[in-house]
Image (cartoon, one colour):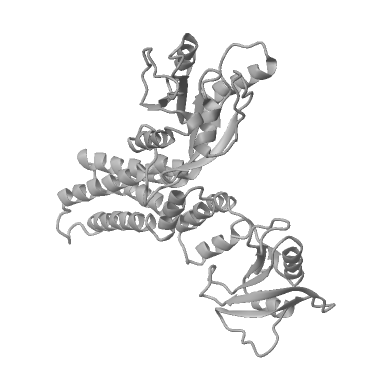
Length: 452
């Protein structure tokens, strides 16, 4: 199998996109490029230079595209191999034809994430940085992108590497006492305990970012719930500044869930406008009501909406009993028509809106961020955020370190210390990509796009 891989490195959409890039990486990249690319004049093929020219079919000499060529020779490239990028016209046909010519000249089609995998295997980045690249490409908010960029710059790798180094130093001290007990002074157990406490505290602090980091990646699911005709669709339209949902004076207008994607305080939010919950004989509306109940049950946060003019009715009470186990904001809508006079139910926050008049939306967003930042719904502005794989490895490391502490407290022999200490070191190394299995790498990089 060829050592040189090729793939389209940009999104390809018909009739859209001005530039499409075909990327090659491997020992034959330059040779393949020279076979296909003709640069007029005396342009020099030198690393990190851009050449102008034409891509020609090597057998028919037919011009396939007018293009630019960017040459990056090893080790000064993304993969630390020879890398060539052919910048073609956007669309579908040009880049597809250029890619096919590269494959015909001996390159093979890259697997998902294989360019980044080669960067990792060649030591240019560690595994946390590789995962941050994936997060950066898939970021759904400015804060998620900033967090991914921080990971790419080593904000996670550096503290993990330092923790692992500390554990390795402790292991070396312990093993030295085992092997050369008569030649060395006694082990300073107080110092060792202090070091373990510090390492455990830092591990616990990093672990605390798992849920908040996941929220930045996947977003917050918010369901607008209430009985018919309380203004749920008007609230969605005012919040999203669009007419996503149909708004009428007739109850039961919304028959299904209407979704809108927003960003609030750097957090991506999926807003679900649900059908008004009530007993009905209309089969279509009945399906919508059932979907509304399921949406409320799966939501991270419920915006329970009532009509200020009608107050907290018996039907409102029934719906509230179904959703009150979820984190909940009480939205009192239509305050331009009346002030609520009835007793209101408990809620994390109470927000008054007049959605039809675009009033109260800022207060609603502030209430959501207050709940998020208080920890009642997990999220925060983070420089550091670990993913599920990293969290699992850190949890194993924490458990192993706690076991070492118990071993020390029980005054067991030094040989017992090393067992769990090695487990902690291995778990920390897995985060960085050391001692990681091929199946783990396959699982991580299979989530990448082919050209990355």
